Amino acid sequence: MGEDDVVPAPDEAAGTRTPLHRRVADALRAEVDDRTTPAGALLPSEAALTDRFGVSRSVVRQALAALEAEGRVRRERGRGSVVVDRSDHRRLVTRAGGLHDQLAAEGAAVSTRVLELSVEETPEVAAWLGTAQVLRLERVRSVDGRPVARIRTYLPLPLMAGLRREALADASLHAVMDDLVGSRPRRGSRQVRAVAADEGLAAQLGVAAGDPLLLLEGRGAAEDGTPLEVFATWHRGDAVSFDVEVDDVRARPLAPVGLTGGRGTPPSPAVAENPGRATTGDGEVDVHRLLADLDDVRTRLRALVSRRP
Amino acid sequence: MGEDDVVPAPDEAAGTRTPLHRRVADALRAEVDDRTTPAGALLPSEAALTDRFGVSRSVVRQALAALEAEGRVRRERGRGSVVVDRSDHRRLVTRAGGLHDQLAAEGAAVSTRVLELSVEETPEVAAWLGTAQVLRLERVRSVDGRPVARIRTYLPLPLMAGLRREALADASLHAVMDDLVGSRPRRGSRQVRAVAADEGLAAQLGVAAGDPLLLLEGRGAAEDGTPLEVFATWHRGDAVSFDVEVDDVRARPLAPVGLTGGRGTPPSPAVAENPGRATTGDGEVDVHRLLADLDDVRTRLRALVSRRP
Image 1 (tube, one colour):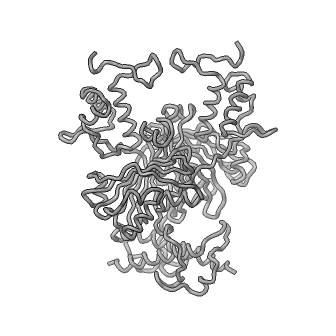
Image 2 (cartoon, one colour; image 1 turned 60 degrees about the vertical axis):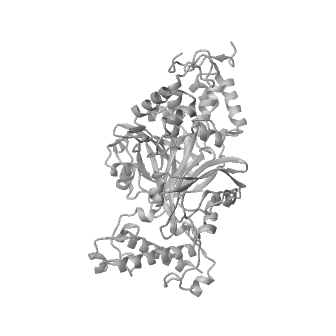
Image 3 (cartoon, helix red, strand yellow; image 1 turned 180 degrees about the vertical axis):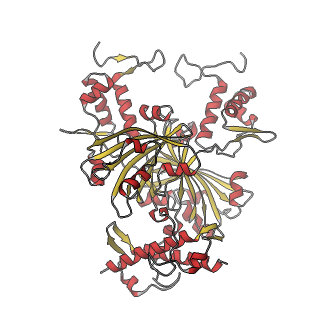
C-alpha cells in the first residue's frame, strides 16, 4: 500500500474513507481558520508534522500544497509555510455608523438586496420601539458581489411609514432614515455572539450550515433618545471581523476630581459632598466618572496644545 | 407506516436515517441557537410547522417536546412555544478589564487552569512587545466548573520573568501583573471574530469540533504605553456574549469647537488655523475630534450639575 493510499478514518461512519493527506490538511486548516495558528505564524516543519500525524513526509507535502492552493499559507524558501493574512472586512462596532458606510469607506463595492419589507406586530421589539406595529426589513448585503451579511431590522411605525423598498436597494438604511425622518441612530447598546448558521442563513450567505457567523444585535436611538431601530446582523465569520476600541479612560478607578483644576487638584466641596450619582433622561449617571473623564480629556488636550507648533 | 417511523433523509449519506421528529427539532434548534428566532419570540404554531416541514402534527409535537426538554423553549398555555432567554456570561469588551474580573463581578465561581507557561521566541508577537523573548501562557478558564474560555497570552521578557505558574492558578493575570510590575493593561486594540473550534480547542472547551467560538484577540499596554500582553481568547459561543458600548459622541461628524465656549461657540482662531492633527507618543491624534469630545463632556457635565439638588 503506497503512502498516499486511502485508509479508513477511525472516527468516520463505516463505509466512508478520507485520504490521509486530506485529514492532515483538514486538521491544519481548522487551526489556521480558528487562528490558533495565527496570520504571520510559521506552520510546524514537515518533520514535525510527520511526527504529529504519524504519516509520511509526502502526505504532509500534499496537505501543505492543498493549503497553499487555497491561499491559506505561503511557502517561503528556507522558512517553511507561513500563514497568510487573508484580509477581511473590518467593522468598528463601537461607532453607531451602519455597515454600509463602514464597508463603503473601505472602497468596496457594496450592494444590498431587500428580501422583505412588511408590517408586523412583534411584541418583543415593539415594546422597546414604543409602537404597536413595526416594519420588518430583511436584507442581504454583499461586497464585491459576495454576500457578507444578512440583516434584519425592525423599525417603528408610523414614524417610518414612508419607507419604500426601492429606496433601500443598494443604499444605507441610516442615510435613508436621515432623509425620511431627519435623524439616524447615534446611540444604543450592542451585543456580539458567535453562532452556527442554520440552513436558511447558510443559503443566503453562501456558506455551509453550521459555519460560524458573527452576530451583532442592537438597538439604535436618535441623539434625542427616540427609538429608531432594533437589528440583528449575521456576518460571515470568514469575511468580517469587528474592531473594538478599548476605553482606558473609563476603565480607570473612579476618584473625585475637581471641576476646574487639572489632575491632582483637590476635589471642590460641591463634588466632595455629592453622592456621586445623578439622574438624567438616560437613567442614573456617575458624576465622579464623568468628572474624571472630563479631567482626562482636558489633560490630554493641554498636552496636545502645548506640543502644537 | 406510522407517522413517527424513520424515513431516509434525502440529504444524508446512503445507509443513515434520521427520524423525522429529530430533523424537525434539528432545524428549529439551529434557528433558536443562531437567534433567527430570538429569545422571547414565539415559535410558529403547530399547524404552521406541520405545513412547513410536511409532517404530521404529532411529529411536530415530538420535536417541540425535545426542545422543551433541552431548555430551549417554554410551552405557555394558550400562547405556544416561547424561546427561553438562556443566560450566558456577558463580557464588556470596550473595557480593558480582564475576563476573570468581569466573570467574578457576575458572582460566578471562576477557576483557571494553567496548561503551559514557557519561554519562546515568537517573532510576530515579540516585535510588538519590544523584546526578543516572550513568555507564552496557555490557560483554560471555567465558570461554575464548566470551561468557557481558552486563553493564550504572550508576555514580555525580562519584564515578566518573575511570573510563576502557581501564582496564576485561579487568579486574574492582570492582578498578578499589578503585583509583579506595578501596572496592568489599560489601553489597546481588540478584534472580535467568529471561528469554528478545531479538535484541540473543542476538547479543551468541551464542545464539538466545528462549534462556533467567539474569539477576542488584542494587545494591552500600561497607561504609560509600555506593552504588557498580546492575547487571544476563544470563548464558547453558547456561553459567552460580548457587550459593546456605542460611542455616540465620537460618531458625530467632526466640527471645530471652541476651547472655552459651549456648543455653538465659534471656533477660536487658534483652532481654526490648526490643521487638526497633532502627533503624540501614541501616533497622530485628531485635535478637532478631541475638542469636540471635550466640549460634549463639558456640556453633559453642565446639564448634570444644573440638575443636582
